[in-house]
Length: 146
Image (cartoon, rainbow, N blue to C red; front, side, top):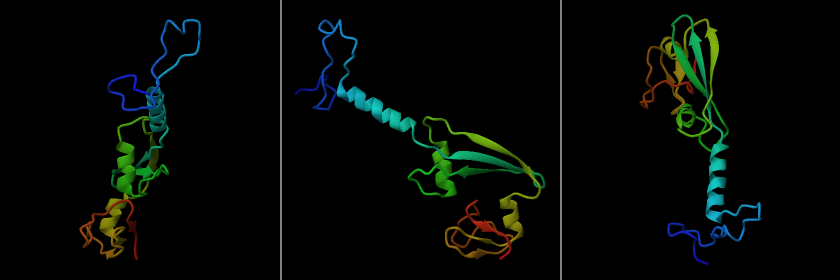
């Protein structure tokens, strides 16, 4: 069977029915390549997206964005969740704004206390925001006094 259009590479593609032969029929016939395209688009629309949560802090005045993991096949790291959120596709991602918390944001706290690097898992001394492995503090790094 030949494809119904020159640019259609699907050899199983069924040509559209002749409009004169189906005037009494209420059933519309579409080529298989068109139907498979609709299925692919509907799957793309149904893909989950990571959601952003914006958290404000009263003492330092900073706002920090965290991303809630969507459960998709990408890694569950801050950078990958942010990339998933910023992907230009439908459905549009959501942003939640949490009420401000007392205290300082995690990046400010990392300058005041030691923290564990999420990449090399070494302890970084207070006052430094970059690990010896050249990884800067991110929200996946654990903070606090060790």
